[in-house]
Image 1 (cartoon, rainbow, N blue to C red):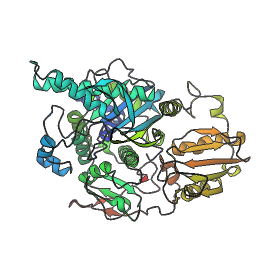
Image 2: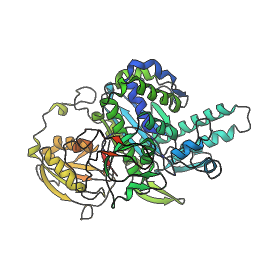
Image 3: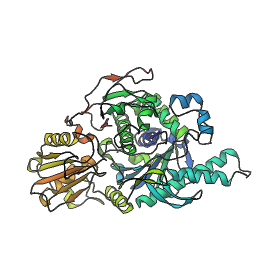
Image 4: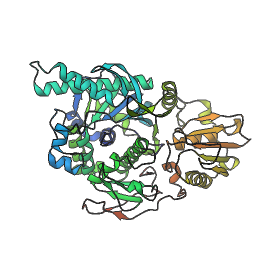
Length: 521
């Protein structure tokens, strides 16, 4: 789900980043595989949250840990750590490798009826004041809340008669509650349910899926093709298959990406896009062997709140598809060093306004709670609208590619300008502007980017202006499906084997596969 598609949570300092894709897959399995509802009862539960609705509108927080341990505090096996390129037992035990940070968080809003959802990815480095002090610390990066509360809980029970596994269960629930409270405070949204996975969970999911398919846009001659910390290594850009170890490395890399952790968030969203597409189009849910493998992974690695009735939730979720499951990334105000740490500066009112707009957006196909008379009004022909595209994303040539894609959908091509050319500079958020006559078309165009359209009195009649931000660094799936590509966009590649000795996998997605694998850095 590029900058415009998705839903889920994860990441780590050495970088790990999307175990939460497994949580997304579990939700989708719950939705599509409602004929095996009885098997969903085996998923572990937590008392960190209670009282949420089972159907209808709701907010779900997907979180994933960078932990190199299991949920009972046992260090993962040397073989598993090596396969995941996640350090060693000695490093975990003595050097502080890993932790209990939720370095990727995704807050998903499910609209009534389960036919539409929006996910907001929250960058792990967002600096916040915690809802309360955890382990004596009152502020820090949002991904630290879980680990601080987790450590505080373990410290409080260190000399008690509480059993080992129970101590860690309590610590996990303390961490979950802290992460939930922190996200609620940042976004201003109440969280109804949550799902959590750990580092090993994503690896197990990738194995159950027999690898994943991605599209990588080259940056600076392919510097993003290799990363020593995550172990990511591919031979070329474009569409390709990744074996399970390389799938994990793909979502962990951040050091060699143009926008660091923000681009890693886009990689996470792209993987979720592929998971959704595969579940819908490749018969996974009719293959009992693969379906059972997914459910087995869920039972071993996923934790949800105890009050969440997944079988009942499933009765609505089967209507959700990649086409109506969109992603955005929470806006940041800039980068700064706080207490010696590289962090994201944020403006909480701006973030809350973005989330509120995304979660209350009208459902075009409905005249009910979210529908208005405007939703049923005809949209003027695209040929009556000229679209100007300004590139503030930092991705070279993207403005031209987006302009061509919009022209292929019937719009008139207008001005095209890169960030280096004044007056438009690199900025975090993608924005779409319109004058009174182009409001309906602007709303449709904004939907490709998961952005909101805003009125502007300075635009010429008949014009819509798109200002690309760093939340969109590759062609959105909805535009890419037209076959248009930006300057320097990767071409489809038949197969790729990665660097881990895995056999090459057949690539089934490309630029014309809607919501399959959007190209990202």
